[in-house]
Image (cartoon, rainbow, N blue to C red; front, side, top):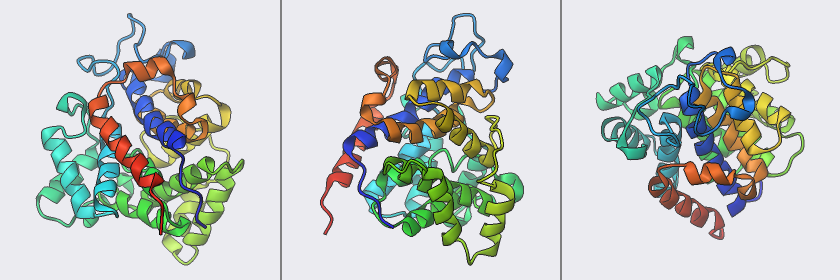
Length: 318
């Protein structure tokens, strides 16, 4: 199935929802839930007595989550398709020179992502640089996957393939790839107004992988998308996906959703980034918190990419 193109309002909601979730979550990273301020105090600027993470990073700054989502989206827009080698070069440019990072400062790099970048620098093809072991299932490819939804205009099967392929560059274990696929299809149907988008996404992904026994086993026995398992905000890809869905189901507006994601503790910026993107698609541009948008840094980096995205999505198809 092919869904309608995203509107400029939906594009803004998803694009900036992701960046806001990341930026608001940065100061609270690595903290246990019981060490965090009350929910309504989880703000872009933390309480003055809170021992914030990344103290040298100015508030309103996105981390590797936002930077690599921008890198993937920019690559898709410039190439007109997923080009693993182009994306790999952008990963290196981010890692070594701070491209897509606010102030060109890279302050947070996932272990698996860093390892894959080293492999790419050693001339290993980017599509084969990702970790393949079960221990390689961090959330580093899921955190950037919304870029696929924002850019893509084709069928569900093509979107799943794109989500799967982009994951392989850093996180090539089939569990991470299926999580990215499920997240992207879910986000697409949220944007399409499907009131049971998760159920639709599970059906679509299940049908797509029905002849792939390994992917099917991962979906049914590890991801377990129909089980009511509480998310804990960890860096494990399956838990990150569960945490985002949990926040989406329990909250309505974007600000409260990002706060609820952060309140889970641990990998706060990534959980809030993943949840913020999909909730942003639901609420659109009007749902972006004005004060947070005014506090978000790096607009000179992200706004040109957003303008390219709107031009791409509003361009008539043949």
